[in-house]
Each structure stands twice: as structure tokens, then as C-alpha cells.
Length: 315
Image (cartoon, rainbow, N blue to C red; front, side, top):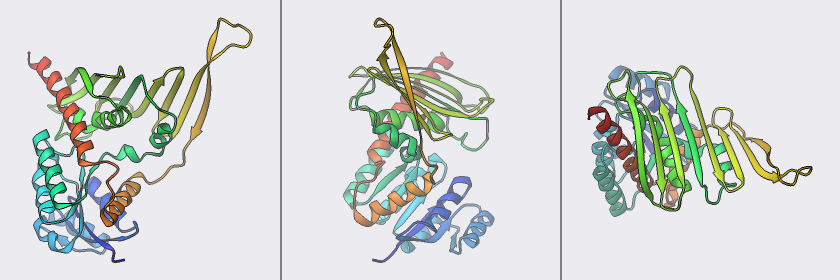
């Protein structure tokens, strides 16, 4: 079978890694990269022995699949261009700036019978995959995602930059619809929301409390999931899942206590796994693990959270 030809649009910090993964994934070859910075673009092209294009539109005749790793304001027009031209697209999160734009891309990909995958990387994290084996119907989720301040990523607020990862995971764990959202936060340094807290209530009773900050003194990513008498604690950084279960105390019948077990997953190249999954979907026609519809749902919740917080700040 002929290898798919891949391109990367935007080879900054993350796009560089996308380009590198295409050189080591199976069933694909890196056929070109595009960037608005000619020096950076040519450097990446030379590094990975491929062709540099100063205009992303010149890539379209040379590729079958594309990673779009540019600022979110450019996601919709660039993804629309490639999908219209018959190219499968992996779009970094958030999928688009607006829900209407996301719906436009989803409909276009469907009409063209193309794969539209969204770069919600945590879906491929082995500790998340392990957690899914233990969870049936979560009742409460507590998630924190903290980062130190960096200029990179501040073209969007912290909800679309960081919290959207946990929004996507929570939505993927629930079989119900969002009933109510309450959110608060603050602008600290970037001119956009840098801290956010949100409580999301679902129709089936699940409550998810999410917190994100990109002005923290220490980075960290964690999630706790409660389901009946069971408790799961996820440590993203150390790839550890700690599971607990409420049991009767053998010495005191009226006392219940938690017993704990820990599972440590093997560290894997999550981005490579994500891109290999995209390549497989494009070559076989199987639905992507993170679809355009998934990306749209996460975006919709994220926009509502940001809207609530900004409304409170400006009131």
C-alpha cells in the first residue's frame, strides 16, 4: 500500500513535533511543511529532509493528510481550504474560534468523506485509557491543570488553552447532556483569562469541577473521579492511577474505610500515538478517536465558561 503523504502547516514549537512524528510513524511520509517564517520553515524542512512552502496553499497538491498547527484564529480558513481540496485534516485544539465554524468544517468533512480529527492529546494518555477501564458512570470529577506563565498560547484564554483538555475528557466520560455551568476566573497577566474555575452539572447528576491556571508557581495536572464507593486519582505527570474502594472495617462493623491500589502506566510518546491514529483513520476510513463533533462539543462548553467569566469581570 502506498504511504500517505503528510504536510504540516505551522512549524513553531508544537508544529515542529508534528513534523518529527510523521517521519517515524508507519504508513506515512512527510512531504512538506509550511510556515509564515521562512527561516524557521526552511530550518525545519532541512532538519526533516522535506520541502518548505512559504504559502500553505502550495502544499495541497503534494499531500493526502495535513496537521494544522497555527494560532486558532487561522484554524477555520486553513482547515476549510484543505478539506475542500480533498485532504484529511488534524486540527490542533481548539478546533475553531466559534461553534458555527466548527459545524462548517464538520459538514464539509462529511460531504467530502474525509477525516477531521481534533488534537485533544490527553485522550491518548495511557493513564486516561487505564482509567476508562475502571469507570462506568462517574458521579463527581475534580480536575486541576496548572502551568507557569509562558507567552506561547496566550492568543487564547486559559479556558481554550488548558481547561479545554479536561472539558473534553469529562464530556467523553459522560453519556449525558450538560444541564448547568457556573464559572469564575480572573485576568492576571496576558490580557485574557489566566485563571478559571468551572462547575459543570450534567442531566444525569454528574458534577465536574474544573480549575485551570497558567500563572501558577508550579505546574501540575491531576484528576479525581468518584463513582459510588470507588475513587480514582490520576497523576498525569507520573502516569499513575490510584484506585480506592470503600470497604467495611473487619474489626469495627460500623466503620468503613478506603483501600488503595496503584497502577503505573508505561510512558509512551502520546503525540506519536495521536498522529499514528490519525494516519490509520485516513488510510482505512475508520472514524477518528477524537472527531470534529467531539471538538465542537468541547469548544461549546469552553466558550460558555469564558463568556460567563468575562461577563462577571466586565459587570
